[in-house]
Image (cartoon, rainbow, N blue to C red):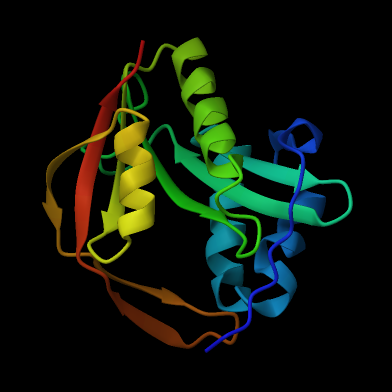
Length: 176
């Protein structure tokens, strides 16, 4: 069993802001997510091109405690079409900072930004076994619209191919 320290923080002290290039290293959470380094860099490139937005939640004494990636335009129009529908992925809150409203704050920020950009639908995938996240999404108005196989691969920070098999629910929310 892993011992996880719970960090009680005041939600009013959380700063949610767009990720900058300087913040990229912090996405690795002290090495825990280093294997995603190339994915983070690719997501940041998408943001620089205007195809995505990356939001981060920062707590003054701890740094990055949460993140959410929002694809607004994608090669797959079933995810993000550049006009009406966007796709949320890479959404996480650090262990020890969960259940304090940080995830809801990040989600609300992303949804408000999408509304301001004229988007009316947001979709996301949540692993079948991620019951807590699914509960959060349902509380926030998302509904299951299908399933996805969740099979994908990526190159880790050492250039090795990693295969992922994470069957998921596809969820959708109509904004506004």
